[in-house]
Length: 128
Image 1 (cartoon, rainbow, N blue to C red):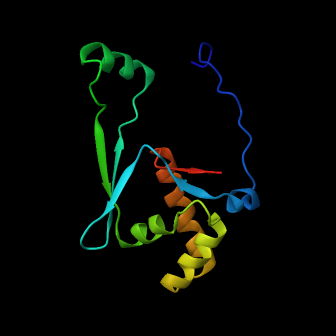
Image 2 (image 1 turned 120 degrees about the horizontal axis):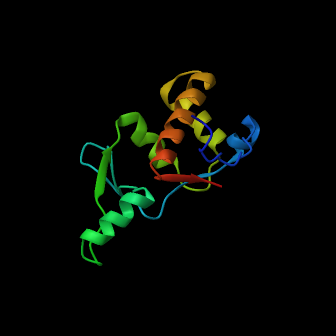
């Protein structure tokens, strides 16, 4: 089966220390607002593969907007989203979140890194 598949180039993984030193930031193509309940609602373009993007552009007007998605975060996710300012490192956010929720740093690190990974897959945040 693997005879004709292209091999993806190997990208080096960051060490734990390197990833905790990164500073998360909101992606510019997202827009977000705070609801009356204090929750965060994020709107973002649906990422399309090159194939679907070509089909979309062929059958729609040239100025047509791409499909949009809306994501509403729960209370904990909203707290973390507000902490992301491009200044604080991931480690600082993890420690602040642990203090805010009265949980251990390990629990906080697991929850925050998973949350960052999910937001990153959707293209909502980046790390630098």
